[in-house]
Length: 160
Image (cartoon, rainbow, N blue to C red; front, side):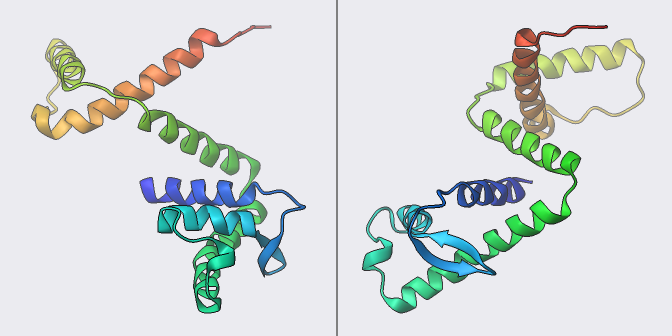
């Protein structure tokens, strides 16, 4: 899931360029701008290299690395339904927000104990895994709940 979201992030970054930016290359007619190549090189070389300083074989190698995201982006735009695009974008946004959050072990342990109590009260026959095995899943669930709760607090819902 993380790889998919990272790939979507690259696609969104590469897809958001100015039409007037200088073109470094094209892939099936789609522009890869010098600005895009410099952003990629900033990450890859920690700012030590730019498109203009890159030798010809380095430029070719960089474009070969960047081309798949352009092709995937074009295929996604063409083949995904609006609903699928919204789901992908929502998932990417949620993952981005969750990456900025920190759920403590103490919070996760508290939620785990509540779940254990609820399962016992419901006389559940399902085996509860040990905390250490469930901890990461609980942290993800708590982060999602916190984000959704924040959105719901700001929501202006009108029933007609």
